[in-house]
Image (cartoon, rainbow, N blue to C red; front, side, top):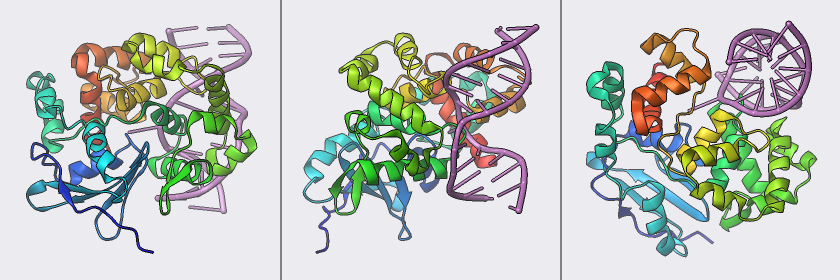
Length: 290
DNA sequence: AGGCAGGTGGCCA
DNA sequence: TGGCCACCTGCC
């Protein structure tokens, strides 16, 4: 039997991303569970939610969800996309007036947002990310959902919880194309199973303390911790330093041969308390140059 | 076809 | 601190 979807409903008119900015927000490396179908619709899963998004005239965005779930989806989606917040004002507070390159990045991707993903699944996704490209990370995460998560709509699977993952033998995890990352996930799952509440407490901590705790997990170093905090806990001061940012800082800011730690320090000082937001614009721009 | 890929951790000076 | 290397394996 065909699945029933809710009627299309508009997202707030305050967000009018171009198709390109919409793609960069959903599928630019923050999240790994959005796919663009042949008919131009974005299909996404986060937490227990299943959503379709469509880009319409005048850069409006509309959403639809399986009818049975749609009532809960509305507030969850607004939160996920952080649409209660004036992202333009946030971006405007970045030091673009004194940074020509940042100004260009902002103007290239107006409306680009930092998502508010569920903390635990952000951790899971970025544990998969080491030396992998977005397509491959998406593949691993999809397999984890299909094989170890749960079906929440016909043919749509949510990611496994950490409790569920703790029950999966590492060899089974490896079958999800995880490679050496399987051990990271397995060890982290066992630790979290033995420390109930640890993840929630970590999410609630201030940035520096939360980061220190995350870095104590297997497979979580500075970069992964910063991604988890930026995309999964809305800590906008987190400034993940990956190869793209190292490249950007070298070519656009003249920081040739700086270490990741030095770049992270420069980023915090130069971009300020919203350094992570700046990072996302720089990242999008650099990737677009390819 | 074979090297490379959004890192981390361990080991050595 | 700073540098080097193993760790897995599917994809461009």
